[in-house]
Image (cartoon, rainbow, N blue to C red; front, side, top):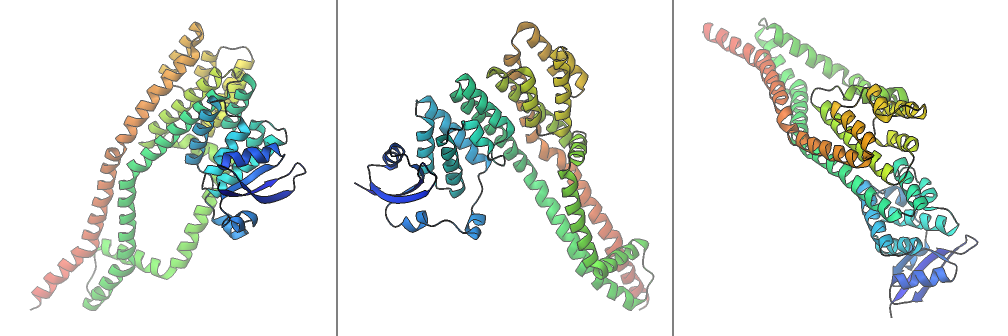
Length: 412
């Protein structure tokens, strides 16, 4: 029978550890829980005793990769499957903790188990980790616990996270080629400005010829860059830092979220993805039995857009005053006629949840199509930028060389 090294906390919260012989880690967890000890880590063999018994240092903790959305998706799907099979929450968390190799996830699961062992609800335990669990996630878990539909809540959250990750991955794939081209353009401009043009400036100065205006501008820009590059670098860093600080403020985020909906190419994609997120989140919360006012408060935090979130909050205030949802949605001014029509029909027929799911699926498909064509939409802009670079180089560098060659030929 294999030996397991374990580490846990007793009913008084003290850290205890030891070794035990058992068939698997689940049996070890059951033995510890039966003895009043909440397991923190269970590892096979005695060689890991040092790793289990010694707390991680600060540097090691900083090097640990955090819990990301992929981990949360897998956790949601596994918890839904285990809960559907009738496995208790504590045992489910213990099994996942013993089977995951990620240190940050082990710490998270251990804290959730400690909170449950102290009598807290699962949603309350998750609320202790706002960097991992969003307000929408916590609200869905709380509703699942209140209504006895925790399995359904976990599975719906897994579907929601899967859609979010799929959209992000498609956007990254679509932007990969344009970003490589833009990066190559930036590197080329830096090399030309710092190394190529100064060399040509020496050649031009030796001939004492009058240079074209485009060449004089290029030489002026190159000289300014070489002379003041520390100041330019500091200004760029300060500008990026200031922009990040401004976007972290409520006013900055609101302004940026409103502006990005009006961008020429990305704006329609962001709008469709946001509407799909709104419809999917609204349907999930409504199906789970969340009151409509509470649903709209949660959905306003889920859409990940401060501008549209504020409009949804205005809708909630209208509903609280007794107005219909369709009328409040029309007054918000951010929904398309299709969404407004579906909401109105859903209110009249009592099938609002079903129609919202159809809206979400429709906009998810449109978002998918738009993302697939994103590269094709950006290519003309990239070609224009590259053409402008070639024109600048031709006028600023090769034209005076041509003139100098003609002058040298004429002087023979």
